[in-house]
Length: 224
Length: 306
Image 1 (cartoon, rainbow over the protein chains, first blue to last red):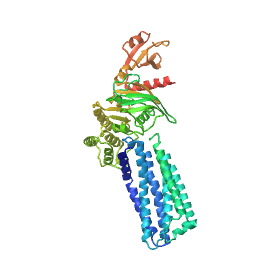
Image 2 (image 1 turned 60 degrees about the vertical axis):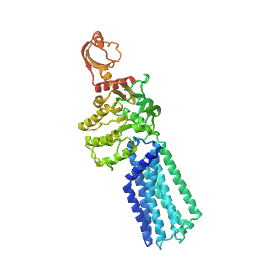
Image 3 (image 1 turned 135 degrees about the vertical axis):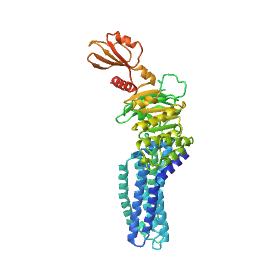
């Protein structure tokens, strides 16, 4: 493993995605602010905007950083350099994940700050939002593994659509759960066992998906 | 120079492929043996879809063979290994740069991976190729894109250049600029070039050794001059019942009435006398161009396979 090569590839990709990243980070933070504006409508619009920004960031970054290398045939150029498949895989999966985490964390951090700063906000809602954000991260990781395995825009979009449908069902089931729905209106931030259990499942899905993405990538026999 | 594998080797090959096979749905690369000696220019000629690009991709570790071994610059190569690629410059016609970035960005990127990057030479190549470092890739013509890629390869001063159809689609001026640059590299006897093309003239211009490939098989491999000296085309006037003498490598090419056209791939001076004494009248004995030799070799290879 060549850590210097991995670092160079990682920074190159981060640089290549700089403009979409700034856009999604700014859009996400703005959406978080809208969420905390007074009134239920603003909160609803802000929430929808955040989900939209997260989904758009996911598919766009996978497209720009992963699928485009195959479609635009830039991977042949990169792999003609003194880079092993292991170096390439570590750099590629790390950078796609980090690029997604930048707006994702930006939104979550903005929400956390705003929830504790804005007097009208209920701190208890943070646990509810963390569950949704982790669900979106898990969905992104499943899109990532799909993109790595299939190298297909079509199949990746299928997983995005399925993920979107499941997200809506997930939010609905959270609202219907008595303990979790109560959290959204609570003045106190707490982490009941059911929330921790869901978070654990989401974390496992994320780790398994990332592991699979990495495994499929390094087992690839042909790179062109 | 490419050699048969049963010959003893005096030096470590720049690249060695032994028993390489690779199957795709509609194509199979069959048992490829190829040995490239250091300091030589090797041309790989074949029709489109012959397997030239697959061989080169296997040599770069971009494609894993189903069987066989590959070593390049003394090291086994696969997608798992990166060290050999430090000394290899690979160009492929279907290789692309990042279109939203400039040539300068790519120079910086490649320089960061190659400690031996020659910045002075890179700047000279920019001038010689008429490229502007700040220009974005998406604004470049095909010729400029090819030259940019070659600049990124040549400025690393690689010991082995693997060039897959580098002159494909270039206008005559751009083609000459690229070939001239390669000719200069050829003068450095420590550097080896493997050059593929379906254009025999380009390959003939710079190659010491030529390998013909067709339908996934190596059909002939030889020194360029031996190819040119060894092949002949004969035009004979012969009666209908004429039997061609048993000369190794002599094959009929075409017949028009009493006119027989025959090709030979192992020419020796006494062949004309043997043809004359067989009852035919020799009208002409012509040297063949590399393109004619290539076509004849391909057709012979296909006949033998059938």
